[in-house]
Length: 159
Image (cartoon, rainbow, N blue to C red; front, top):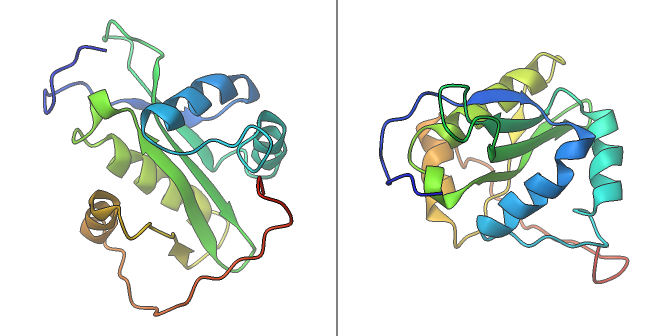
């Protein structure tokens, strides 16, 4: 993609992800620098199973019809909830389309989809080494007001 950074573009379309989007989403995650475990939580089978539970919260941003890249997936976000708290996960925007409002549009749409289920708290975890995501979420009104220790126990290295 040869779009210059910070070049105004028409707003992307945001739509629910489809099972057949998986390969393009995995490619986007890799381009954005996210790890994709072919056997773990990011596998095609896991993605499709999770999508079946949260079909309106797994969202992709695509280029609009006026763009020469119409239909190309340029962003993704995965939303979920446990009937008490919502989660925003795996937010990624292709490097060629960053700083153009794509991430903010995805987060806003995901947040709205989660809240439409009656969920009143929406949370996310941000890696310490990701100040851009932290700044985005703070700009959108999320606050880091819960001091926590994040612990996990994996059943295997790919989990």
